[in-house]
Amino acid sequence: MLSKLTTEELRRVEHAVHQQYRQRHDGIVRDDSSGVVTEAEQAKEAARQVHAADGLGLPNKEVLKELCAVAQECGTRNWDGYGAEPVSEDAYKLARRFLEALPPGTPGPSIGAEPDGHMTMEWHRSPHHTLSVSVSPEGDLHYSALVGPNKAYGTEAFSGEVPKVILDLIRRVPAA
Image 1 (cartoon, rainbow, N blue to C red):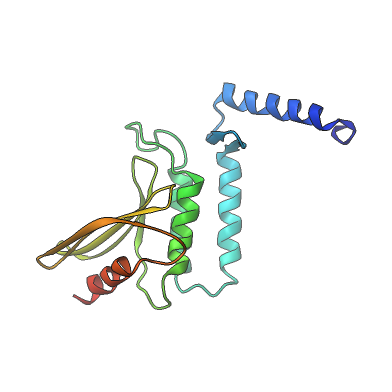
Image 2 (cartoon, rainbow, N blue to C red):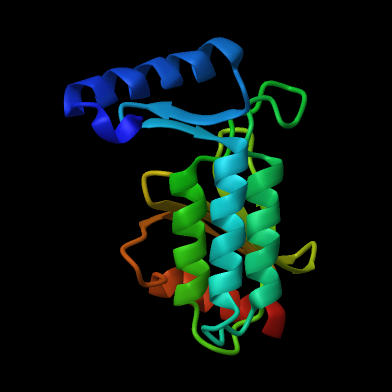
């Protein structure tokens, strides 16, 4: 039946389906000009990506699974009960690319989400040896670290490679 519709008719059908999702608020994760992405679709894609990672020989497969689980758990508005924004697909993808860009042998972080919808990674040895990196959907890496008595914080753009300042901090936290 759909194969007989014109392109314009298909656009109208797609628009009507998107409107139905919006009216029902059926687990919408993203709703923008490119369409509607539901929780179920996001979970299916995240599971596919984790499965695909198994064949890549990545050093921290468990970290990627944790990233996927956190993105799914925090993928809806108000996931924390206090009005948090959902983790966006862009933040998830950039966080995954960041993890994949880490050199082999880098200790894996713990994964979390922030109320603004950013993904966060933390390397923690003690209260005075800790690093937190927040990945925004725009590709900004916001970091804050305590390494002994020294503090470091700032924002770096993520362009596919882990910025040197962040990589140096990752190396210093566990070794301190």
